[in-house]
Image (cartoon, rainbow, N blue to C red; front, top):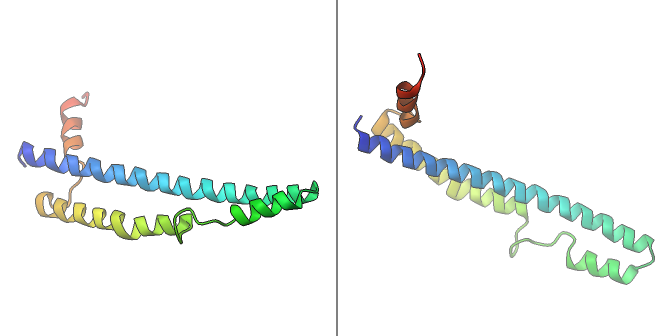
Length: 119
């Protein structure tokens, strides 16, 4: 395989890896936001127990279970990314790799390993 094709496939592979990292950040976002919402519920109970019903109502109505984007909870944000952009990116990358490299991946890294490996 020529060097230009190896470089192009390597760039596409690096881009895919970045989307996978972004996907992981979305899961972090999902879990951290869910954890915050659980703590909001605990804060509501604590405010009520401390005799602050008005403030508890404000927190409960204003924050507990609130959408993070219009009409969406975090699990929906993750699902839209997974089912849309990330799936499409994965399929396109695989298709290009299949057409140009018989499905092999990490060709540039494999070549580097051969050049640099101590024998």
